[in-house]
Image 1 (cartoon, one colour):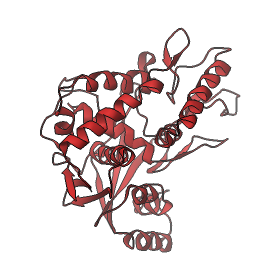
Image 2 (image 1 turned 120 degrees about the vertical axis):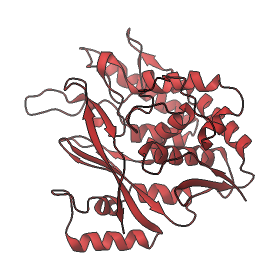
Image 3 (image 1 turned 60 degrees about the vertical axis):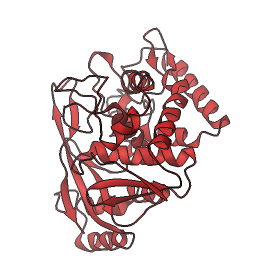
Image 4 (image 1 turned 90 degrees about the horizontal axis):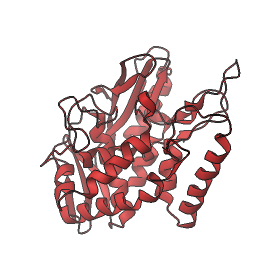
Length: 330
């Protein structure tokens, strides 16, 4: 049994938790035997058969290359990415061609039995042609995951303006630098590189972020299922919010977890209940909180981290960002 340690991770940043989850899913999909995730103090650790830097490097490179068929898929004269969950407002006659294109991509993924991709796209969401307000205006963004925080200014969107460029940059890296970026030995921000870089896409405050970390973190969105609703925005696992009062939440645990156990905890109502402790209008009654805490502890969870979400910039194109964690012991 070998381990891969994300030694540069900061437990107070949502970016590094998401990268931990995304890397675990990538390695699990690649076929690493006996794969498990755990915390060694503040450091995320992955363990599995024959796991080392070379295996991690090859698995992530292969994963990035394998996503190109749908990340590069576009429609319309503006070359908007077909699989982005939030897009500029559609013009008359664009909805049906867009939906047909989406269905073609999903059919190809289904025929290829690419279940992790389908899980990811289901969690990421889609433009909500079904959601309207009381005036009959379509609420196009209501089908998107709350983790999708790419700013919408100047027509930018998640797949076309984030996943595609990351794909191009990372596949050009020298051998070994993807694994070294994930372990924290190097920090290469090809996508931006400025002191106020926004490569982390809302999962951390502005600042340089290694692009391999960011790719895995954005892939980690797939571990948080979203549920569509006819009325109101989709419900996103790992999220608590109403209007502009918003938080993300994740667990900290002891022992080795399989990726499937991690997904079940991230999607649980017990995690949300525990994370809402002390929040006016969101906290359940004391008995429910005690039951949630007991349920989580029985599965090895020792605490919950809650990340406040702040808004920056203009009201027309706000930038949502996760702030540093608030710790909630169980």
